[in-house]
Length: 405
Ligand SMILES: *Cc1c(COP(=O)(O)O)cnc(C)c1O
Image 1 (cartoon, rainbow, N blue to C red):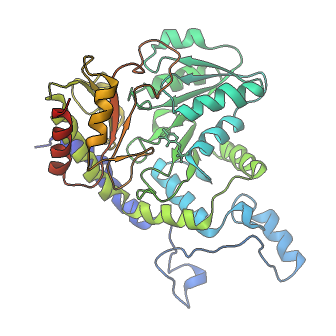
Image 2 (cartoon, rainbow, N blue to C red):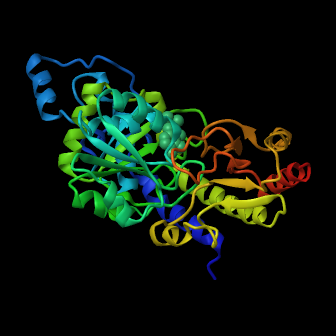
């Protein structure tokens, strides 16, 4: 019998063979035939690449522009192997690694907008993406309209203008976990000649963006691939050759890349991402279910819960779930009481980010910005990132904390 826990872990389990094999040296490769190779791509640090003569330098520069090239700022072998594995996970044509998840969001927006354009961004987007749209994009005369992440098709069509070049999506939404109807967004975007950009950080490996009509998929590799809260990295992946040329050209112009040591950490983290996340997803659902039974809790925002508003779309489009969800407390709970409860937890670290091996808690109350009514900004709420801990220990810690309310 398939349990709910099996369902949230299934997509992670299916990813494992790919995670083991892609993006590392092949001993049958010409270069290694006579000398063998290490299992993992070595870290090579360098700005300058030396050539035996000018002719070879010119040849490498023209033939291989787009991948390894004549200078360190175009990336190193370990970055390109991370790009190969990321593209394989997303089922895309190719990936550009950038310095952070936020840089992935901003580089993608800069690549696919120009002065005079209009772009639609969900009200539930990652906060720094909103800040970039409201300040830098606006400064470059790109106008943003924030839309309800659960908008209906007819209402979305009504928001489209002749200059709408980008629909941005993030599913589930930051802190509030709305699951967006991505195929519908793609339909509306493409009918208007616009592109659909998706921040797919929560869905990495369990939501196939290009099978659902996305044009550009954005990743904070800081989260699941890093997995150990010790590196910051981002990725942009595209499905088509022509989009790849746009992206690669923009990344070179903007000087976007990442250091070889960070790429190496992410590549190492990816080998175990499937087993870590299957386990973390199971524990997260178990805790989410337990929380729904608590009298102090008003709602648990986790799309794998059957009565979650996003459950039907999650079941249709995702092959698993992430370890991150939110908890809304009863309105009678004051912000002060919630903060005292959070301070009392001993198994959850208080800190930003998520997806690492360790569990984290972060209050959402007062910290999230929304333009439209109906967000969570005033309810007493917090977000949990579930790590590899024993579920019983996490539940005992939460039980102790909630009983203090
Ligand atoms: C964390 C996060 C980012 C930014 O990633 P960094 O690597 O921390 O810059 C972007 N989008 C989402 C949805 C995130 O959770």
